Length: 393
Image 1 (spheres, rainbow, N blue to C red):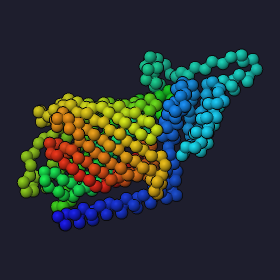
Image 2 (image 1 turned 30 degrees about the vertical axis):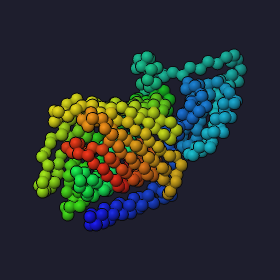
Image 3 (image 1 turned 30 degrees about the horizontal axis):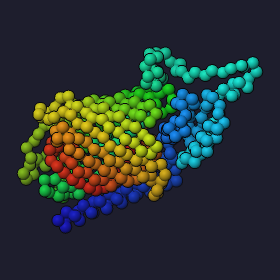
Image 4 (image 1 turned 90 degrees about the vertical axis):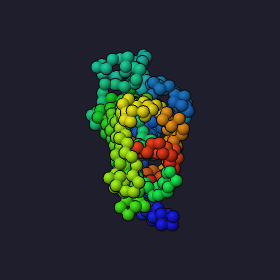
């Protein structure tokens, strides 16, 4: 027991030392530009303040942010609105300057102009107007866009990302040190721009590898590796976002694990599933919920339905070494397990640029209790806690 605990503490200390070094790099002067709150984050945050807190109509203004400089164009001048917005927005972290102007006031100043009517409308006509109006997207777009319109989950253990974690792992009455590593990201194929900045519709490829190792063995045996690949369609309209994904997963046991003492009977776990998740953001908080249905599966008696929901917090004010607080609770309920909770909790600090598709580092403490989220062990109850480090690109 002392040997296993010492191994876990030693490996955790090494991971912590590596994380400390990376944090110092991310908070150095060379990283100052990347540490600023991103324009895209500010766009969504400021829009929510204007529309939810100050009750502005969505089509009564245009918002543009470049390098923290906020420019708001009002379609109908209102001195009180301008003063209230200017006072509140200047106090936000990441805002460098605020300019609020009224389009109709400028036009009415022109000699001969009696009245001004302004209509905001896409100039593209290829996409049906009804679709444009309903979804708030245009025909304009970009091939291979950066990032995604649907933010990745903070606490989901099966979120595709680059990460490494060390955990004290317990399953079937046995404790050992588990190292989990993952490789994966979202690669945008095409994005239709929204009628306002930050909104849109995007098609991507999302792929990931999730591997687990038993660090208490001399050879650090590979236990299992899960491979996933899918095509998600993501959509954003203000604080609302949606992800529809069709994906495949296959699981493979490690050779050394199978050749060890008392190896399990191999189960060829492989399936294709559809997933639909809705997300709503309010200031620094986010809630999401949805589910998935397995279309084709092996083994054939695997029950197809599951629910997926959670809550997240992404702070904008740096706490330590320019690191912003970040936390998430992710819960899954599988029909296979009588809808019991599989709960994942992560809390820590995010360094770098918070915007999806930008460079960032996340250091988090993690805890999980429920059925094993990896491979053919999905019917085993597990509990683990530890420290994880992930990178975003």
